[in-house]
Length: 479
Image 1 (tube, rainbow, N blue to C red):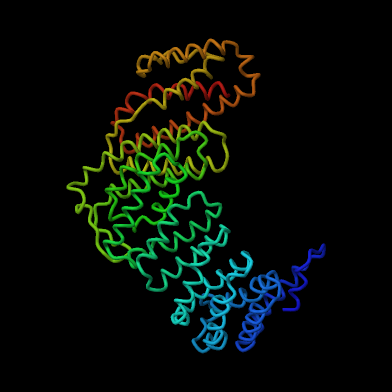
Image 2: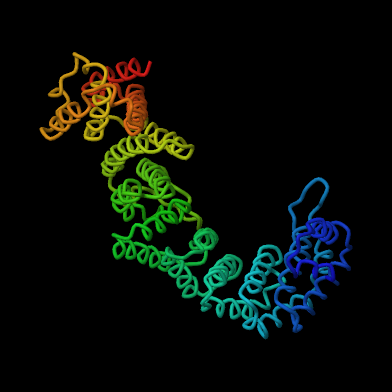
């Protein structure tokens, strides 16, 4: 504990070796009795008038490493701790003293120290729940007061611990629903990672902690929030992130969610300036739609109940209409993604989009594909071709079914770029050529998917012969 004082003041000297020494000592060197003394010394420090910074560092450098080494998973070299060992390190009296200090002085601690103490409670709930049973009322009272904090970091760490408490102990359904609803509405929080961690902890336990009617109320509130916040993309992204990460909790009510899922795809993935995480979420949402629509077997839910598709739908085919807009969304998404700035995340998303599209086409064929996204690709390709060569003679605009405005735009573009020299001298034009090349590559990959699983699709028969010549022409112009 005395060595911790080194870290209380800023220093140009690297004292990381001291931190490593403390970590190794409390983890590997100390006996069970000595570890118990460390806990007792920490509780004495926690109840004293010492600085909160010293208490925080004691938790981080001594208590956490010691508990991690005690509760670590079974390995070849480290067997799991026995009940006798745990009683030596954390006797009932030590647990009682900790809870008493939290209830008495917890409201006066600095937010940073409060967060570290919540982390300690979370570790104890995960590993020694039986020792905390008689203190659960005092614990929930202490944590519930923290949920009223003005500090977001402290408040949402409190929600994480409350969620862990719900998983470990029987909790009144009213409390469980209140926590769930509060987390659903926390999409504007700066502590998004903490909100997500709390929901990932709480949501899988809902079928076990709520009756069927109470779980139905939770689903109804989720749907109500979707209706109320239909124009709030951040709120929708937050809700769909929860559902895509915990699909088995919501699968029993999928008929109520599917229409909203399809309607949300464009808002998430194709909105102007949509963040990368929303684009990735939209693709995962599309994948979940496919999974739910094509699931015809009874599914074992988290709570152990059985759900069968036929309970809510007279026929599996009645929901296949959801897949067609998903296919068209993925095609449009793939092309728009290819036209953006090329980077690793874009390539990763492109692979994921084409993978999901391949899964859908392999399951069911004869989709009616909207050709509008390909008009833009063709326009870009023709723009590139007209700078050096005429468009391929075998191509006729009327065969593609383009609108009069699209034809007019292509003629205008061709006229504006009539000189090859000015075209290639502009960096912007070079970027447009690269974008056209990437979009063309994606189109050809899409055609290959259809050719592999649905070669008789009208989309393939009509449009492949129109796009493919541009591919050869564009490749020749680059050479």
